[in-house]
Image (tube, rainbow, N blue to C red; front, top):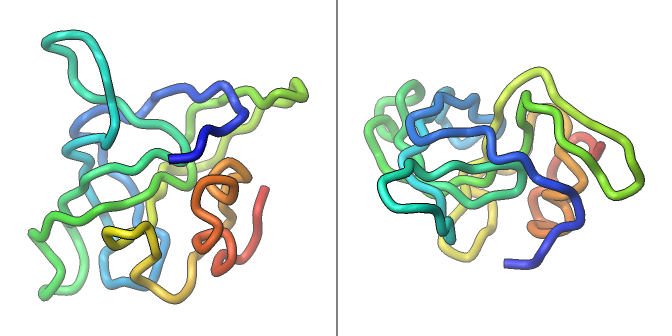
Length: 132
């Protein structure tokens, strides 16, 4: 994964419920793991903006419910700092479901996407309605 410039706050714990912002059929997902997370012994994995996470679909279409999927975190409520000194936060925690290559499964993303996601996953930023 490509490095990003912002000081990322890892605010999404193992078990956090997030809104699914694409049209893949999922509505709510629960984070069960964070890819490439290296923490201390006996600590739960934590994710932040532009992290690749493993999720279970809790609400949505019946054919996608109870499935384990990969997702990318595109918005977080917790405020984080960018290198130019600005601080940014969003009104919800949102993810986009992706495949093994990091390409989104849906064809559109509801709402805006953080600029850090566009650096690491350009296809997600391309199908979003805006980049902040």
